[in-house]
Image (cartoon, rainbow, N blue to C red; front, side):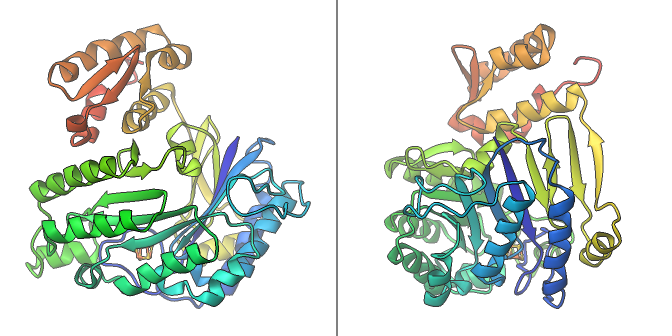
Length: 395
Ligand code: SF4
């Protein structure tokens, strides 16, 4: 089973912290869809006939397009892959089947786009999961982040979706915002858990270079991001999520039983995926490729039959290090059995030796040959993982 990601490169305006590839100008919206169709046609053999079980529209802001336009893209995708029968009309949700054997079809929604009419149009599409970019239920945070919606619009978006019978909803939150407070973060979490959604993604605010946030901090127009505050708020997040019966199945992702984001879980499990649209990445088990991060060039190259991506073959070392990095972030952990089968005894022995100091210091734990980060270890996930990486000589 494989996944397909479609990157929609437009936003209403740029959030201060964001370094994703997207443009605030929407003048190329129509031309982009044309170029995307060309890319869909040219990529139809990329996953080598592997059935697709997830489709994810992200960005950017995919909800700047009408649901009907996105549905047309999906139909194009399925017909390009040789399967264009109509969707099963069974109810929305897990049981619904799709023409491309797709089980999870996610749309990222910005709250300000979710109106009654928009949701009514969504009912006519194949989307069965929605990721709502809430970020905060406090207007002060939203202003700080330069989001283009209010807290009331975020609440309204979730309610409108639920009232229409969509229940497979995830919300995104950001913590560690310099102007915020502990009380505000706790209130954010309480609001999130009171909404009855089965999935929550929560990320620490990161200061990416060359973003307005980096500039604001550099010019002392904002307090810097505080590691101590982020650690405190992350601990509060883990505690409250547990109290509300949410499972932390990945460091930043929490869900009710079995409501994992299948698409993202596939990334973490090293399952192949095809990424379409500027800046999107693809992985087929052997190589990784990444599309050009320039919309005008993407459109021109698609129109002239040029190559839209760069590609690199992955070495054993790279694949192993990626497995270390991603597996430790999830509740499925790093499996010695899988490591031996995919990478051999020598490298797996090395892992066991290198993991020992982290077990001694309480950052890792091992259960029946599978290694996991402890709650304390989750605070240092990147540091632990990179200490367990190997070099080409060791692989
Ligand atoms: S809406 Fe999302 S992609 Fe667009 S600027 Fe904000 S964070 Fe970035």
